[in-house]
Image 1 (cartoon, rainbow, N blue to C red):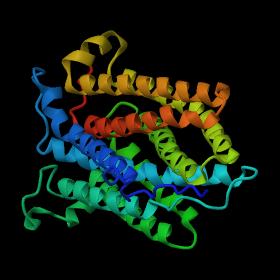
Image 2: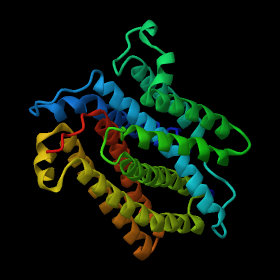
Image 3: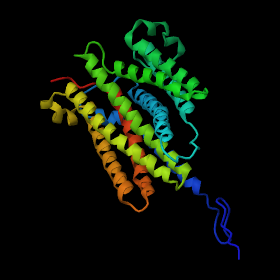
Image 4: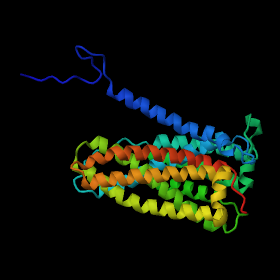
Length: 335
């Protein structure tokens, strides 16, 4: 007797058409919508009752920065995990389709939007006539904005070329530009702040993008033992990345909020409130990562670690969205 398995998307004799991929697609769309709403709706909630004034177009700027950060994470994670997979014994030859060209395109659009804001004196342009492109070359922020636009354009060409590994150089330029932009020359010891931000951004990109690509590879490889080995290698590196993120995050916070005022500013300033939300999200991510690591070591089937890992990558997406909002809010005054 031959057993016939129902084909996905084909109706059973007594049931409706079942489409397993439809529910996943809907879930992804919902998560993307929530990620976009975080920077769009967050400023009003963060600023409520603080007496602070937000810059014009803060919601749009926060969204563009979130897209820019996400566009940096995706290709960095792919490069990182592909390097780990190459040194993995018995790893399948197949790799997930690269999302780097799409990410670079999204990053280019986001960087172009942010550059247009800088070109109008940090105001939201309402027409092309208001944008002074030549003025970008006359200011530090303008030059950094142009660097990010050009870097994403070059990264997209590298991603489409026969040597995608060359993306590392334009992506590094984006990370350096973001680190310099976040710490103007008028700040106390700006180079120290830029160094901390550079390490923070790099580690975050490796963590977020690496986990996303690892889960995509595991789904493609199925029950192959190499999948569990790849996730294990990633988990060991992720522990170091979390330590570096925590150290640079705390140090950067203490540079902007002296120890005696941290607790007060975490609730009385917009920057502090969003920072507190980010800390809570990262704490949740750390718990999910620990859960996945325990399953990876002790479960009969190590690939059951994928369940908490999927939750971790969703939470990391929210962290990216909150980070975009954080960079658009006014920096707290040192008391």
